[in-house]
Length: 410
Image (cartoon, rainbow, N blue to C red; front, side, top):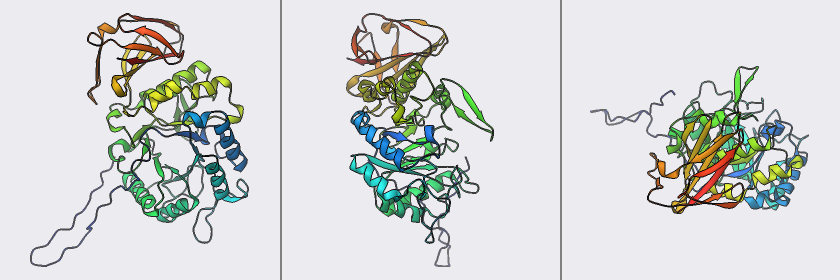
C-alpha cells in the first residue's frame, strides 16, 4: 500500500509566516448506523446490470410478504447499471429512463413505503466497473444528489481508479456524505487490495475484504479479463489476522451471499453459517421471485441470525482443522459461544468432540471458554433443539460440505 504523506505547515524562523498544507483530511462517516452487521438484498449476484423498476418493486413486496424483512433484511441495494450512460447538463447522475421510467425517487419512495431502506451503487473511479459514470471529481455533487433522493446506503466500488489512492478517495466521499447531511451507511467495496481494515473505521461502516464471490463451495472462477471470483470458503480463508479490526459500526464484509444461487442446500447452509459466524453483513443475492422454501428457511433461520447480530459484535475464527473437519468459534454476549463444525471434505465424517480437552481462547478480544470449569448447555441451531451439555462428548455424523452450528450457554 502506498503511504500517504501528510505535510504540515512549518513556521520558518524570521519570516513570520508559514505555507503549505495546513489541514489533514479525516474521515467523516455517520456514526452508529450499523451497530450490528447490515442485512438486506443486493441485485448484482443474480441480475448484474439487468435491473429495473419492476424488479425492485417485486423484490420489496416479497421481502415483506415472505418474512425476510421480519427476519432483519431491510436494505434493498441496486448495484451497478441503474444509471444512464451520461450525466445531465448540470452534471447530475440520471437513472436509466428505460429501466426506471418514473425516475429513481419514485422507486425509493415505494421501497420506503414498505418500511424498508434503499441503497445505490457508484464507484470511486471515472467509470463504474460496468462502464457507467463514476464519481471521481463529482464526490460532493453526488453526495448531495443521494441525500436529495433519500437513499440510506451507498456501495462504493474501486474500478477505473488509476492515479488515486484508496484511503484518500474513500475519505473524500465519506466527508462528502457527511457534508450532504443525510445519514447514509457507507460501504467500501475496495476488495481488500489496500487493507481498508487498517484505515476504514473512521471512514465507512463496512468494507469488503476480497474480490467478488462466486456460487461454489471452494473454487476459483477465472474471468477472461484476468481477474478471479471466489467460492465462499476461499473468501472465508482469504485474510489472516483482520478480525481484530471488525466490530460494531466497522465490519469486515465478506461479500454478498450466494445462498439460493447454484449451490445445493447443504452448501447454502454452510455458507450462511460461516457468514453468521464471521459477523459479516448479510446481503442476499438471489432472485426472491424464484426462491425455494429451503432457501427461505436458510436465510431466515432466526437462531443463526442472532449469532450474526449478537450485540458483542465479535467476528468468529477457525479454532481447529483436522482431516477435513474444521471447528469455528465465535464469542457471544452474556458468556455464550457459537461453535460450528464444518466438513470441508468430500466424504462423511464422524464428530466425537471431547469438550474437556479444549480451552477456547480468543487472543484478539480476550474471551475464554474452559469446559473443565464451566458447563454449557448446547442447542443445535439448525435442528432448533437442545443437544445436551458439555459434560459429555458431542457426537454426530456430518455429510460432505455440511455444518452443525451450536450455541453454548453457561
